[in-house]
Image 1 (tube, rainbow, N blue to C red):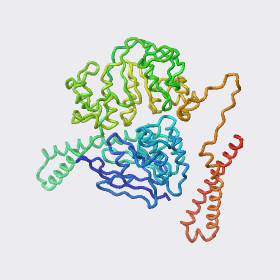
Image 2 (cartoon, rainbow, N blue to C red):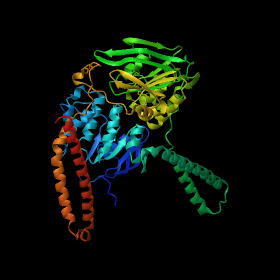
Image 3 (cartoon, rainbow, N blue to C red):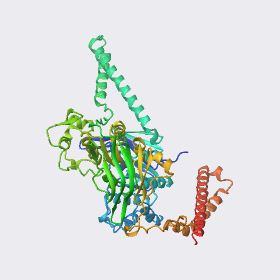
Image 4 (cartoon, rainbow, N blue to C red):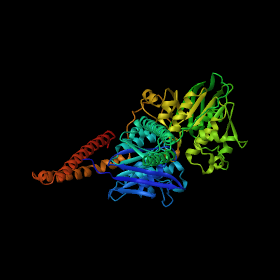
Amino acid sequence: MAAPPLLTLQNIALTFGGTPLIQNAELSIAPGERACLVGRNGSGKSTLLKIAAGLVESDRGTRFVQPGATIRYLAQEPDLGAFESTLAYVESGLGPGDDPYRARYLLEQLGLTGEEQPASLSGGEGRRAALAHALAPAPDILLLDEPTNHLDLPAIEWLESELKSLRSAMVLISHDRRFLEDLSEATIWLDRGLTRRMDRGFAHFEAWRDAVLEQEELDHHKLDRKLAAEADWLRYGVTARRKRNVRRLGNLHAMRQQYREHRGAVGTVTMTLAESEQSGTLVVEADKISKSYGERTLVSDLSLRILRGDRLGIVGPNGAGKTTLINLLTGVTKPDEGRIRLGSNLQMITLDQRRMSLDPNATVAETLTGGRGDTVVIGGITKHVIGYMKDFLFAPEQARTPVSVLSGGERNRLMLARALAQPSNLLVLDEPTNDLDLETLDLLQEMITDYAGTVILVSHDRDFLDRTASSLLVSEGEGVWNEYAGGYTDMIRQRGQGVQARVIAKDDKPRAAPKSASAPTAPARRKMNFNDQHDLKTLPAKIGEIEAKIAKVQAIMADPQLYARDPERFQKASMALATLQSDLSASEDRWIELEMLKDELGG
């Protein structure tokens, strides 16, 4: 018999500013279930997750949480002001029985020391601290809204592994397609205020969504034709049978009301790229370039040729120098050593990841037109700014909206709209996928694929790189960059591993210089971190506790009349015994592994 759900939302409705945001949403999460919540930007996903977390009260509907179940919610904008350090903030989420060492472990894995003061944190560091705060107690239910934001590729892949190892039930919101495919077992689609559920992972979502929308349009078309037929019958049919006429008239009015209230699928972004004259065959040539800041070397002796039509992806951990490398390749920054040669007839458009080039005081229309008139010229064709705004899902009334009040996703769409209206033959995209919904991502991928010019892009989105890049330039550490043919999956096949986290020495000092080539090099050995040491110290006691629990359960099951007298208790005891024996086996294997490692390292 399936376990009852830990969390249930039924008939949830919420209205903001007179417009229904959520009309009839439902959500049910069973123990250990991993579900993703998907939908367009602005569809209400984050709001529904806050309702599930108990942070927002709905106008209608019921929320039920199993008594005693613990919930942790990943806040988009965490408040750390009341804490002295990130460690204190993460430890504040731990319960009496939780492992205090887990707080330090999570902070270390997310690139934080625990000593950071909240006032000095960047937005990304605050989000990573909030992620550690949510994961530290291993709750019954995890509600994670964009957990991969501000994480680089090594951290994203670590997070996937960490979440897979937890027994917590999860509801995930993310624009990272690969992240959702790897983790989700069920998909909840929030569309036009309603939820639909598919008991399969995100990998099957798009085919299911398209089938649902196709059937919906077919049903709507049938209703439209029936409406026309009923209207003709009323105009020209026999009128003697009065009661039947009245009934059919009532049916017609009901169908007209249904037709008026039908909310079609939300529109899609229409991207048209203004391309300029063709560039020369050679776009960029780097000859043994190097770049350092202080004692940190970001690029060392790199030689590279980018030809017309190439789609070069640049990947590496945070701090590896990806943005610096883009600036070198495009001539914005001069190398310390070596030479950069740019090709002929280049017209470059750059989309920066921070949207810094947007004037927060300008309106949406002014941003697109440059403050000149009310038209936009795209590929030699003049278009009214309102029509161009609609192509990127902006409502006409947003024409006078200041940039400062737009959401992150809207700002990204505005940056795309402005950039794509300018003639170019070289696109430079630094994290273009931030805050874009999946449908807009699909169209951006198609646009890049069809673009006749050259593309240089930085991204932490593995699926996006697989779909767009013809080759990847990967950071190997210490300023070394190597090029691999294909996308991210192809790179892993050739390289044997994904992108590794950058090693940061204490006080951000450079690591010691390598020994002379003539000196023998000892093979690298794994070291015991504080988590290993903690496990080695505590596992014997934990194994003893598990063995004692097993003995108690076995004593209960030794009663030969138990099944006949109380079959439900017998079933629970059997399940508990299986779980305990699995835990015992895993704990013993871990303890043996650590003992062998300790012996290898000389005690």
